[in-house]
Picture 1 (cartoon, helix red, strand yellow):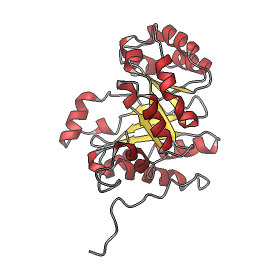
Picture 2 (cartoon, rainbow, N blue to C red):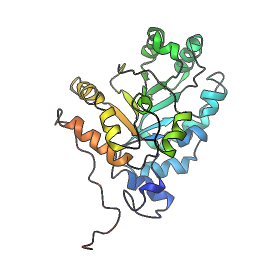
Picture 3 (cartoon, helix red, strand yellow):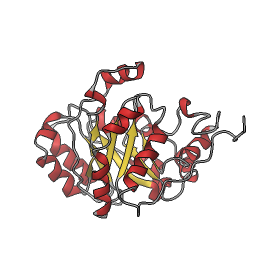
Picture 4 (cartoon, rainbow, N blue to C red):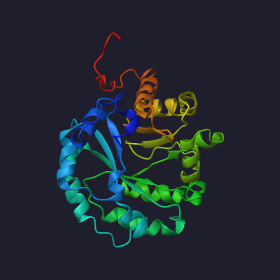
Amino acid sequence: MWSLKAWQGRFVERALPAGERLRAYARWCDAVEGNTTFYATPSRETVASWAEQTDPSFRFVAKLPRAVTHEQRLAGADLREFWHAMEPLGSRAHAYWIQLPGSFGPGDLGVLESFLRRLPADFRYAVEVRHPELFASPAALEAVLDKAGAEWVPFDTTAFFAAPPTSDAERDAWTKKPRMPLRTVALTGRPIVRYLGRDDPNATVAGWQKWVPIVAGWLREGRSPTVFLHTPDNADAPELARRFHDEVRAPVPSLEPLPTPVPAEPLTLF
């Protein structure tokens, strides 16, 4: 996600054409979740535009189509059109994100193992699961992922569900977001974390404090983590992402700073 109405005039210029919105977002953050690919495979020309708007070091973590992960449940999937469309990203494709439905449980791990084995070997993969039994007894899934060199993506919703909702956006998210167990283990050199806070920035910051030493520790180990920060309305997300980055950079000063953002509107005295 790189385009939100609430960001216009604040983080990005107002009424930007579609072909410039990602470029503006990339002034604030150097990674993005590719949710759009979950709903439909984009054209190759669209993906080429994404590459043109970003530096080669920019990170895309793009979801595999839901037709593959949720409808076909990985069985008999044909991804040739998807790989052709995504090819222009080149090195920007940090990982391809396999988000599985909550019903995909321990009995389906053989299907996952077979699916991962068939994927192109020149990409990296990250798997997000939501079945509670996979968290209660993680060893079997970890073994499957380890064999494929794939990462397990935790979705930390503990801070969000710590207190009842207080806004319309929080009430909507309360009914849609999963209550996930906290998982803080990295399997590869490129861990990926998804974190959901609250619409109150202070509550969001308080909830991510456990992640600061974990991510700093991964960096000291030579890993290259990617952290995606969300709130129910996402209105402050770019600013919060930069704040998290700064908090991690304090104990790990060798971490490169994020790009310097360009003001969304011309600065004036009045």
